[in-house]
Image (cartoon, rainbow, N blue to C red):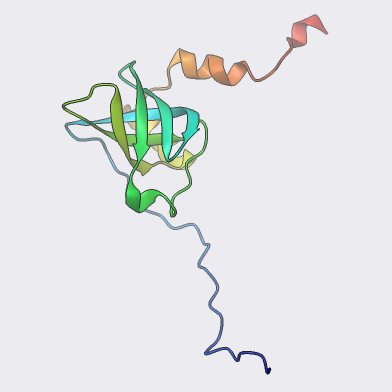
Amino acid sequence: MPGRKSKGPKRKANREPTKRELVYKDDGQEYARVIKMLGNSRCELQCMDGIKRLGNIRGNMKHKVWIKLSDHVLVGLRDFQDGKCDIIHKYTQEEVRSLQSYGEMTVTDEAQQEEDRDVPFDFDDI
């Protein structure tokens, strides 16, 4: 059998970084950091108000936006469940830096300590 002929030229995905508008939190929303990926589009989050919550990735974000460990996200809080929330938006590192410079988001000491724990030894001991 002859091979299938293509119906047109292949299109390459536009992988150029685009400048997008910065999304701030509203009422019923909070900034959070991903602590642990749990699977089934869920993750454990440390919110900036000091509460650990179970975050559910929205359906329209599932296969388009990939969320990893230690990413910063915007979550929508639930009125009827304080321990659960929905992930609305993922921030890039540049957006996180600009939110910190505007005073919207603060990096907690716990987040810095968790990043420092990755090194299994102390450099002073060597």
